[in-house]
Image (cartoon, rainbow, N blue to C red; front, side, top):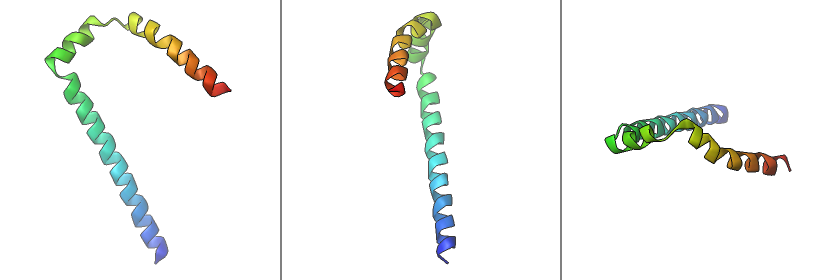
Length: 66
């Protein structure tokens, strides 16, 4: 009996996880479809973004390796 309850609880947790992920994706899609956000994204070049993120990523990887 306890095993059935544990399985049901695990299924419920997965359902909540997938539902939350779906809501995050839906929200991101709604934000990215906004005309103002589209304009900002069109102005950003990928090279500039990589240059800005690379130092933070390197610092994170060094801290993680400690």
